[in-house]
Length: 209
Image (cartoon, rainbow, N blue to C red; front, side):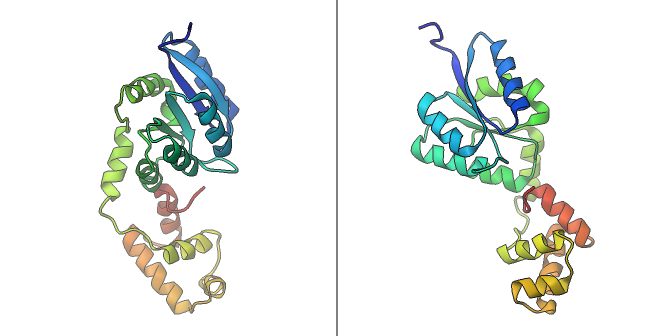
């Protein structure tokens, strides 16, 4: 078989420019083969079953099914699957979720040009590949208090520009309770004010998108 011994790669990403770029890069490598490029997590699971790739590159933010859910589904069905998370986003919460669900690598899209090929080879050889800045962010926040589900609910409404009164009305709690939650959020995130708290929560991946 002509392609025997090649590392077979599946790409799951809803941006055609990313898929095309990865396909072009792999075509330049004699030991790699781009088996398919699909646009969401549902298609990703189907493509994995069909092609059984050696390495899968999985975007996190996609329509229909996100990358973490698809990753978890594939790893449940195929525990040996080697999946590298592909993202523009270095939030430590997202990274932690991906790694807990079995990702073996984490690749920022801004690093594709320099890191893609080495990452694929390393992961295929059974190694884990976590970029230093991702590892540093996870370590930095590892002992930090996580926000509770209720605190994230409050912050999500605040992030949309709403007042404490609207937050209270929507969640059926008092304004004093809202203030208490925000005080706790500020302390946990070491934030100066509401805007700062939202910005930190976005960066760290507590709030998606």
